[in-house]
Image 1 (cartoon, rainbow, N blue to C red):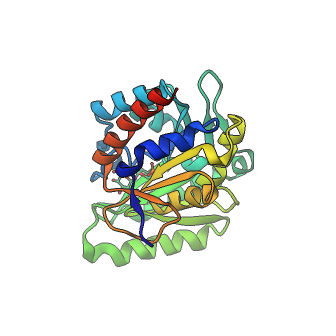
Image 2 (cartoon, protein in one colour):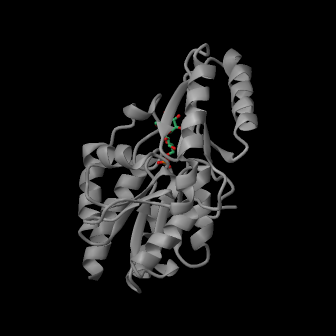
Length: 261
Ligand SMILES: O=P(O)(O)OC[C@H]1O[C@H](O[C@H]2O[C@H](CO)[C@@H](O)[C@H](O)[C@H]2O)[C@H](O)[C@@H](O)[C@@H]1O
């Protein structure tokens, strides 16, 4: 599938959005920041933060991320809407954070997976376990290629021990999550409904496989932009090469939206 470059269509995209109430949904890792060797290193750049502040003056902006809420808010450091933990945690400005209720019953199983994962990973150099309220991430970006069979074995064992959880494969990470019908797409649909924004008014930008759930949720109605240098199979209709292009796009979009107001 060939996706069109979004920088060539900023004005058309702004025009589409201003036809109705709208919201701009942005993934974090790989979209607002380049992928880094470890999660704490993926710090939001000052210019990107300025672009987000300008954009939020024109439109509601939501960060839709696999990171847990406290981490995402600390990294972005702007009072926006957050759908964190792959959508299991939702936070609107001036409102308390809310967890997706059916996921509450999984907190103990998630914490148990993290305990087992830490124990199992203790002898695999370069594997890092990230504990989050609604998922346990087994990061292997820094593992040596010859240790990958050990990583696969650990992930398979964890799966066997925790059949109530499902595994999401991300960028050099396997994440254990509640096995329930909830994802970034469902979270985006929910937050749009809360904002009284039709799906036609949703713009979603993301780079990972989990972002495809959001692209599919708005397909044929809203606007999906995949961040990827190559033209991979996607439900998004537009593409940007990397986070630098995302920053340029968001700046131009804010200007176009201001012009259209
Ligand atoms: O939905 P996202 O905002 O894209 O979050 C997905 C996961 O991102 C983080 O891990 C990824 O980015 C790290 C920093 O660049 C990188 O070191 C790692 O290899 C990637 O998998 C984050 O740590 C996870 O919690 C998120 O689920």
